[in-house]
Image (cartoon, rainbow, N blue to C red):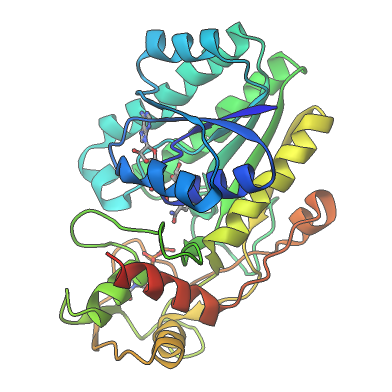
Length: 331
Ligand code: NAD
Ligand code: UDP
């Protein structure tokens, strides 16, 4: 069985490729490397001791995509490819809509043409907007506050309409909470270009002396210690969720959304403490003003994924910090 993985050289995609190969799947990876490095493909092969085809291609390039479907027998697609920086999406919204939404439409059209109607899609908890309560369930109201989030919500709506128009489709919408950590080998992980926007990549750069001080964005939120609370999930746990979603879409038709989170929220101060305790590294930090658009608390009710996919996260915050640090030290 061959699985096409779009965005397979990226952070979550690369870890999912490792788990797919370890589980015995044949994979084909498509990535334009706009936000990833070609070495990652070698690292996936090194970790798994398995070979696979890699195409450096853009989803927006219909003829290249068609050629990939023409020359391979594909059973299902796991669709990670997309641009993901919230701030950048505010600055260059058209690029985000074009890349993420048009890219997905071209992918779905190509899939339909080749009669491949099974997809696992990378959605995001950002589509819950500022939730009225936590933990968040899949049937909570959806809304977005930036173009990146809007692309995710639009794609979910497009995929819903696609299924309504053709009940042969089988689609899993996976709403990720906050993936951090890295593969145990330290060979693959999250390595954003430039100054990181997200908490954990920032923490590891401060700990390794590449950046001076972590700014904690506000300590006056109505949370346990005033700092923002998120549901951090180990990227390997998240990746394994894709294998469970894949098993489900191979067996049943329909479209379903699932929260992939741990169900536990941690504040920024708690994450810093866990990082310092687990790695023994000091993280210099200072409290600054709130980041515009940030919400106080966001964590999942992951019970639907447990009941319907048989999936739960098992790695704790200490392991996430240790693995992120191991990867960072090797960069
Ligand atoms: P990433 O940037 O590391 O990986 C995405 C990959 O897609 C990159 O390798 C990039 O080069 C590729 N890509 C982008 N546009 C492409 C195109 N048009 N054609 C071919 N390849 C293209 O990001 P990630 O953190 O691994 O995220 C994977 C998916 O999960 C994304 O869709 C992202 O929006 C979503 N997501 C991520 C998070 C997170 O915190 N990391 C949270 C929720 C959802
Ligand atoms: N955060 C912070 N300093 C940073 C980056 C993030 O204090 O340099 C906080 C942020 O305000 C939020 C939490 O860390 O409360 C997680 O932020 P991240 O950007 O990683 O995820 P998101 O806000 O998109 O869930």
